[in-house]
Length: 551
Image 1 (cartoon, rainbow, N blue to C red):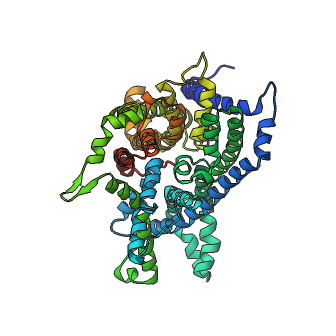
Image 2 (image 1 turned 180 degrees about the vertical axis):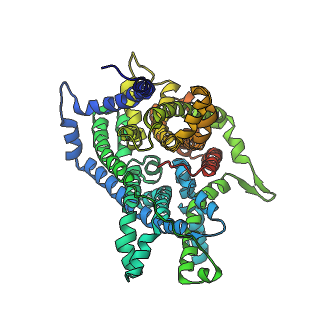
Image 3 (image 1 turned 135 degrees about the vertical axis):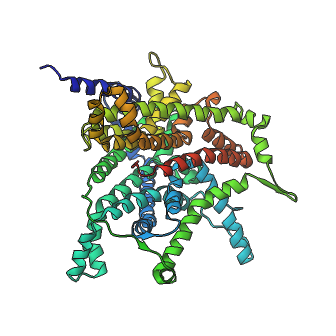
């Protein structure tokens, strides 16, 4: 049976993305798993060793505990924000929504440094409390499970706030009106109407948060200390420090098994959308509302979020300057570009900055091409999700350290020997950023108006002309969001880069980590500000076109 022209075109569009993901994601993933189940034949010995060893069981238990605790705190922190942005209209609301984008695109190393500067023994809050109480105070937050959970909540509450808030905004107001007419109290309306409606989005955001917390690397590496190792850190230690690839692979198998289960549940819950009905009008916040109990709660929550979001960044910026009697100086920035900094990194910081920009630009460019090919193959003729959609979102459920470990196993020997080259880093960054670029681009392609394309063809436009003049303007917001989001993720990527880099391919996050390791906090904060600058530009671009769905 011969294939139609449309089917052949779809296969041609699908072939390149499938080949890329097969070669650089599924194959490394298989090679990363293989040592843990193969020892002159199929075996479960290494997985059994991990599960039977009290030390590794403790690591798995703590990883699960901190992910659950982080998820609970994140949901509790995000739900009030979801209520606020879905029910109230007020001056400055766009700024509030914009601020909630900041944590997710901020590089994890920079955020970890910000919390060190806030809650460390010489941190801002520690000094403030010591001054108020009149004696030294130790908050005992850093290098503990409390620090890990707090930073994870900082990172992920925007996911809950945006996903649940978006669902709450779309809720049919007639449902609550009907319940009110039947005499239901506010609590009964929330329990029997609102909560069931929001349940899919709450669960989807919680599952995605759990995945990110379960796979967290830099936060745990910097703030957890020796006592609070997680599965992700253990994979890195077993692979790159202890050189035990079989045990690292076995630990990766356990992590992948858990993350893929939760990724499947997330994709299933995120697809449980309810048809949009009559949207409720936004309430205006008046002065009498502000001085009420609810208004005080909103004000308190806003202050908490502002401090939580802006505090770490302001702490890093402030600490990147040194202060003398005549004002702030740029000493730390000067030290960054000194020979001392070059001796720590092996290359100059300028080269590290160039590497980050170069790798990120290549990664998002490749991701965009793959995303456009996939989106046109799957969604151009229909606006519903494809059954293949979860397949292309799988990289989101695999940790960067596990991906880096798999790439070492897959590409250390000929004929695909790219390990040790800059291409290995670019490929890893592409795989990591691809799901975010694809999600934004595919949503734009699905929302295109096909009648406009047909009208252009009727007027004599060929395929290229209709794409450039009709379709491209429609999907451009999604392309910009995908590119900027992918760029921000790539430029801040740390786990896979740490596994794959050589000194000449150091990036900004690697430089920050190396400066922290050498106790050069001034240079580390200065490089963090530079990284923050690039992430901030990405944040502004994302917010400009924030109507596109990324999660």
